[in-house]
Length: 375
Image 1 (cartoon, rainbow, N blue to C red):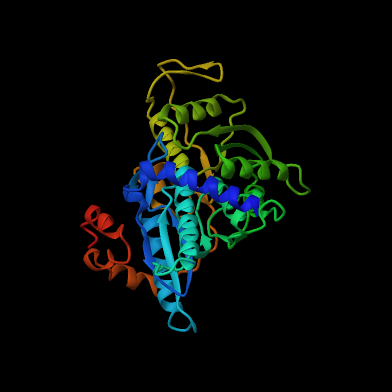
Image 2: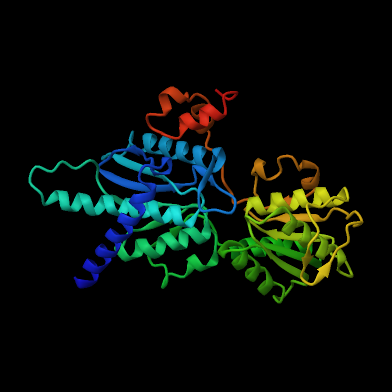
């Protein structure tokens, strides 16, 4: 009992702190369909701002589309369910801090509703959430799960693939609908063996997703039937500057022998930066001249040859990863978790209008204003 009270007190303190800075922020908007049973969802409606834990540009593929397919799914389910299912969608902005703020908001609403039940004349706004779907990012999902399991609230992961979340003793209230990165690492290793690419380099994003993915790949190099040598492995910051990615490629280019194949266990933004760096270096250009890993590069650098890239599901089929660097990405491989097309979604999505849909999805008007050619 005391533990419960201490937890609620900590939640209240965190709530007061977050209210002072984010309560009036656009990221605290909620898309809500009320129901007898309410579930919560965390989608990155906005991209993360480079170098900051803030919300940037509106994100169609990972944010708007996921919110809309969730709304459509709820509407379809309510046609056949004997009760009314509801959903409350919040914006994670692809960052841990904001995802935690939004999770606290979900929990705060639940505590408020419980207090309301015991107060005469109090009218509940909506039922508290009984489970939360998301967020997308592995490290962010772990942070949210550590909070939710204190309150015994189940969490459903739709995109987090880190192997850590398979540990039921540590994450007892987490369920996933996607395979862990152990399977993806195995698929990448089999692809390498199929083409006889046994001498490779690996670049991976800093954070749980990239680091655990690399560890899974590294373990497989010693597995029976796998004969792959990782000549060099390099961690990169997803929000790093252009020169950091250029330096990574210059280091790989100086290896002797030089690996022709690079596996990128990266978030999409990292791979896009690597493609940009390859494009610049193939033309003999650089953002700046720096010293990296005790290796100095002269201003008169020679042009590098393109690498054969293999991207993890952080790239998958995302068009924004190759936008402007299509030539660099040509001939690459990427892995994508099996996701069959939802036949009803496309006609539904392209029939939406900002003026009407903004009632259900408060971010849709912002998206429509920035994509006037679509509507």
